[in-house]
Image (cartoon, rainbow, N blue to C red; front, side, top):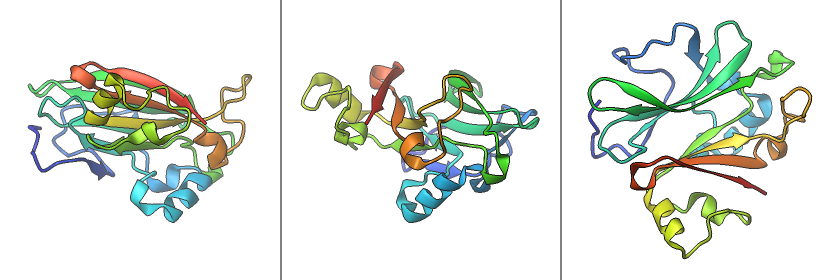
Length: 192
């Protein structure tokens, strides 16, 4: 799992067979597991890879392959977002883990978030009107230089903790962004 310098990022449908962690109660989300509105949006915007369930890259810039995962529980009660940072010795540490309740109607898909990768050098959320990171600041320079993972964070119903509806405008209204300036995890949220 040593970093190949040519690797910007990979979108995988399954973990490598020799991956040192086994998720016996989970499996990687497949394209068909995403809600229909995300699949439709992804089809119209193919370069964004919005139905990727495994991102592989060097998130914290330590020269080792790290992973961001969208996993579905085998009991169909929830799905999980997980970031695993490679320690360089065959071990991984969890940087972020978040569980989501399933949708009430699983016939239209169950995963109602999407994750995407921002390469070092890209602006990412700095192009959004309400970005908490302001352009032309030292924080913006660090953000631009860092890899980042953007995870859609839907507007939720307070009683059910599920999305108010499954339209992309609701699902992608807010995003949580995880990035590693100076190898330390930072998280920001942007809504617009």
